[in-house]
Amino acid sequence: MKKFIIIILSAFMINACSAGFEIIDKPVSFSEERIELTKQYMLMHYEMELDKIEMQPRIIVLHWTAINDFDSCWALFNRETLGGTRPDLAGSGNVNVGVQFLVDREGLVHRLTPENWMGRHCIGINYNSIGVENVGGENNIDNLTDDQLEANISLVRYLKSKYPTIEYLIGHHEYREFEGHPLWREVDESYRTVKYDPGDRFMEAAREAVKELGLKGVSEIRTEKEKTVLQ
Image (cartoon, rainbow, N blue to C red; front, top):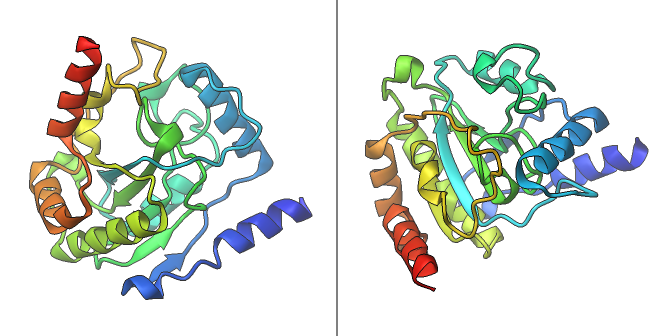
């Protein structure tokens, strides 16, 4: 347990000031049990038998929480198991949903877990993606703020600078574009959810703002899938 605490503390000492914005550490509960449940999820859905839950990020996935209150969102992610809170995910593993970052309505970026620890936030690509949740989107209404957009833009730039392996930037509502792509790993053909977050408006603005990074989106994913089929 001492070693586990040291790993957590060292991971949270990374300072994002050099990227021109602040990251606030607000870690959620992530015990050895949650780590084991994460490993079980990866084995069940990706046939990946893991010794640890660290990953090499290739994708950034932007979300909204569908809840407009920050404290309620943080409390949801602080749970270690689903515990019956998500009937739409019943039978798909009991580790709670989780992301690396949560952005509040004012655009403050909160780091919930170490950036390179896998979280359950996007079917098929959890094993290589960093999730960014934005507080809002209740009733599937796009009410994300300009401050949140600017924070996401800064966070994407920070992550790309820190992890050169990142190649893709997508919205959660676009995740099924990866089906049939070499990076898609979901083995359960019946395990899918319908997503609307964070919507085209938010994604178009975010992509336009970071286009100098050369991150791939939906059109590039489709092209890569076509090439794979032809091969």
